[in-house]
Image (cartoon, rainbow, N blue to C red):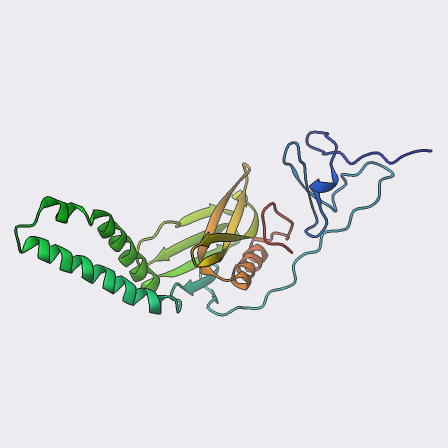
Length: 239
């Protein structure tokens, strides 16, 4: 009686195990070399059962906050950084900075010991960073300009890291990630939009407090302008 040949990784030829196959996402990840495969790809040996085909995500409608416009340079996707969270963060920042000003005014108006000046240094650093973030969140807008030959992301007017330009020939795919961090107030979930570039390597494109439907919308619109077909990526949002 004949038996079916085991599935093998096309990259390293090692046998694929049941735990390597994620049927829900349509992915196979080799447990030995880490190669990522589409279940619809011909990885099975002759006579092996057919794997389910990959299903693209449904179309995501234009979500709140995201604006789309056609410009001379291409299609521009933009959103302001302001969110209701700032209504709570602004008073906290003002109180933090006010306390530090009061502390140093007291230290400067009397013959205070040196420890009174040095002790709050870490708090000063936190206050500066917090104030800068609040101002940026109040004023900044992120703009992603997509043209057939290039992809550009800019944050401003307050300077912020992450400005970049990518040639169309560099970009292989876009995908979204869900990031969860745990703190004393419970889990906090954020969503990020990533680029898969030739090399291969991946870089984070944006993560400015966006919701799930917003990053998915950005992924689909950018892929549409660049002429990219949706395909599964390692670490992406569950389909």
